[in-house]
Image 1 (cartoon, rainbow, N blue to C red):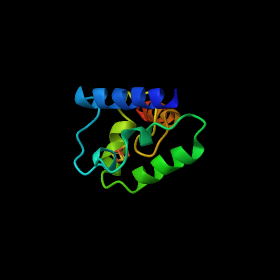
Image 2 (tube, rainbow, N blue to C red):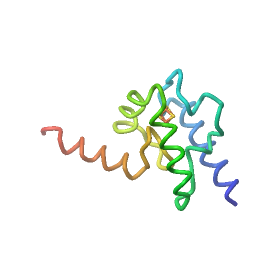
Image 3 (cartoon, protein in one colour):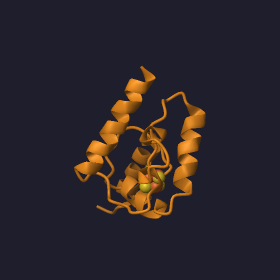
Image 4 (cartoon, rainbow, N blue to C red):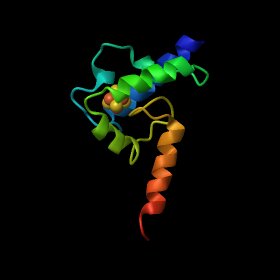
Length: 102
Ligand code: SF4
């Protein structure tokens, strides 16, 4: 069951990436092929998995560009992106929206 969920999340990420939802960031750790893409989609209860993915992101050479995207237009509803959980990404987007003067 876990493997099936991982596959689904991985497929979702790459489908969105292929459709242009994710930026093409040369040098990105998550697309290096060194780690299974499922690494960035740990289960909700998998705290060590989340920390592992987060640390990979924090060492990623394109973290800054990825974070800009993750906190503005990323629509991936699950997983770790730019070292952030989906909830953190949503909160940062909301904060930025509120900070923009009307
Ligand atoms: S910061 Fe993380 S999610 Fe973003 S490109 Fe790098 S490894 Fe991928």
